[in-house]
Amino acid sequence: MNVLFLVFMAIITTRVSLFVADTAENQTATATPFIFSDPSFTTNFIIVILIIILSVFGNITILYIFYHSPLLHDVNSLLAANLALINLLISFFILPIILILISQGNINNSLCRVQEFIFILLYAASLAFTASIAVDRCIAIINPIRYVSAVTWRKGFIASLLIWFLPILLATLPELNLIKNGMDILPCRTIRGLYFFNTDKNALIYGLILSFCIVYCLIIVLCYFVIFIIANRKRMALQNFSNGNSLTKSTRAAALIATSTLLCWTPITVALTISYVHTLYRTDTVYKISPYVLRTFTMLAIAVAAVHPIISVCTNHIIRAKFRQIFSRHHCKTCCKRHRTVIPLVLINA
Image (cartoon, rainbow, N blue to C red; front, side):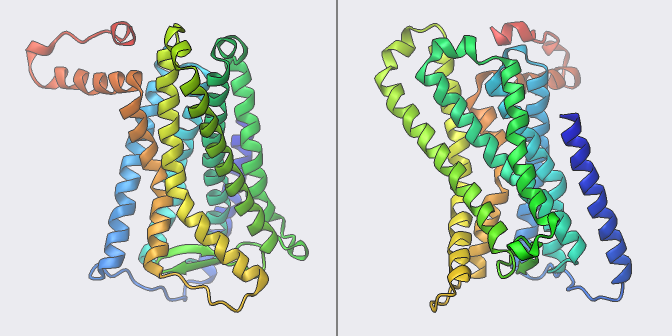
């Protein structure tokens, strides 16, 4: 994990240095000023700010609860913690760049390349861990008794490292400058302050990224289709199983997270797939989607970072209880003296 983090930070540092150098060379370049009188720009700006606030607050709280809750130190929670960390990094790295795009309408090439690497890495990792949670819940439902003994925390940690490999590979491919093989840098193109990728010079890498998204979405759908079928057949067995109730609740929570991911990502994935096919085969049909529709699709995609912690708090009783405890404890210290007694964590976990 430390090695992956160092590699990630090294690439980011390199891209940021290129951005600073490129900015110094293009000080005379003009930028479109941000105009708050434009309702479209103002709405996008406010939405992104709200997503950042909810995502940072929610995911930091979720990570804090995961760390301080022994009952959540299992494989499913480990995968969910990775997802929360990814959402937090999205809030720190991707969403601020989107604010720059909204305010200026365009960015220079170096910042676009920084955005390109981080965007592919984090959103591909988000989709990969959502699919891994679906696979984990599917295995748990198929054979819940064996799952408890066979799926250990150590195996989950190793699996988490392996899950990071493919997103890192996808994010690194454009940096190899394999222009002859159709893997050129993804040039940045903005649509009313929100960016898309140009497929004219990078058909192969663009196709790989879209294939990655489609395959993982299909894995999520297939896993939960199997889960719902088996859960209906084994409902009585799960009720008789001592851990059946908690298993069902955790599966329901994971299903809601996966559903929200699919709902947020399916529109933009379909739109980009149609655009890719149109560009690849040079069809005579004019492909054109309203910029307002594209902005809506993009906002849905970036809203995943704020939606996941809300679902976790609403569906997981342990997270919900400790979330309440954090604020009730703060309330007891600052409000009045009659709430001196704070319920211990042990009682809440019980």
